[in-house]
Length: 80
Image 1: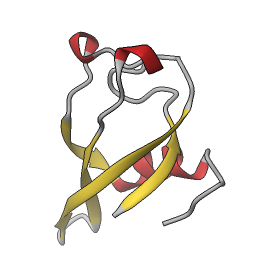
Image 2: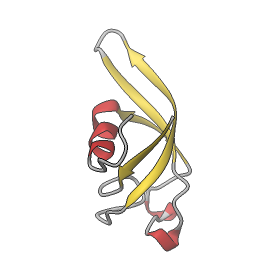
Image 3: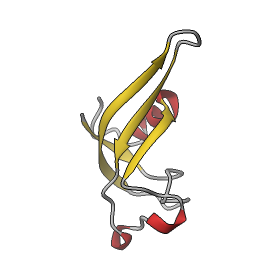
Image 4: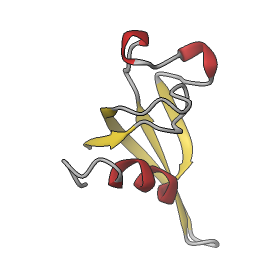
């Protein structure tokens, strides 16, 4: 699933905020806690403000669905 979001606080972005697009490619659901974690691909470049050497990665996994929703809902141009 491809979605728009706002990068402020995301891994590799720090406090730099920009409208951005990522691909969510999977999730894990923990039935005992009722919580889901998501995996996404972030292809942001350093020219856009993303820093792979500061905690950002191309493939990212294990982020709480609520956390990712916070990034997505900050960019109301798209909703997934």
